Length: 360
Image 1 (tube, rainbow, N blue to C red):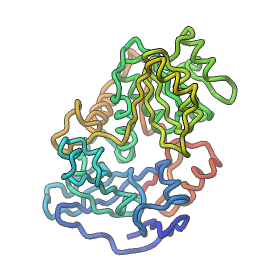
Image 2: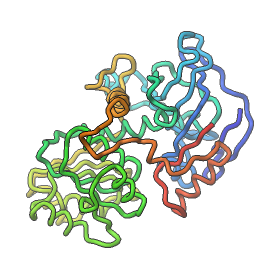
Image 3: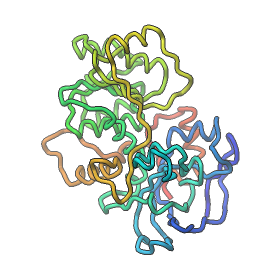
Image 4: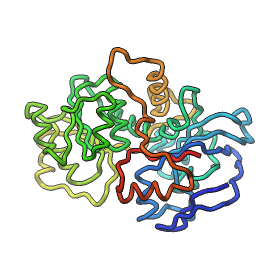
């Protein structure tokens, strides 16, 4: 097979290699689509992976071509939950597998989806309904991450909700929050493509603050009568955005920290006082909940996402001008060989992009 192998920091090579065997308890999956995640950029160019050489890529889908233990799965289309829990730690015993202390991970700790074939534990396979396309299946992971963030806190239908950072996760979060019935949404963006995608979904321009042309704090306070947001999702991961979130959240409000940190964080004294005096609730969010075949829409983010994807396709949404099609966030489609070019776009921000999708 052909694959992109990370041999060391900034040393990604497109090579021909033996396809992996279908190990006991695993299935050999022929990859049909694989998304490039923002976390792949520092992993490849700055920090390296946990184990190298390694095939990156944790957002992918495909078809089972071989499975010794479950031959009934052969020929089935699947998505893939990339985290492989140890099954023994206290978090696994509590079935909070995303919190596993000794996990393995496809694409960062063991070979992932930037290849024609990958071996995947059977438990991690997500069987797909016909309604979900290969590209949508490759986006199940970021969609589930967005849903996990949404479900980390209690939201009230009367809440004013701010989403700051409208990359892939922020845009998907916008879809799922609106779909769940919350209507008072405000957005803080910094790119034309983010604004155009929000408007394409049906949101109004007056719900959007572009930080290049306006002050987000003034915008949020104006829209909330000076009170601030009831819930604020910070999906950037920079100190200034964290402090802005605290500053713009109403007393007794909630701040959900979604963005991976770009560097060390340090709280100013004023920010800390704001958290104390306004009795703010801070919530971190990490990965997504997944329970395999035992999961339900209520306790499994992946099941929730698939349920909503099918519902969106079954409904003409004639009562609502909003249209949610996650594949519309794909701005670039490239081949396996072209992955370095896609990574370079993301690294240098040389073009507007949201999701760069690899098609096999």
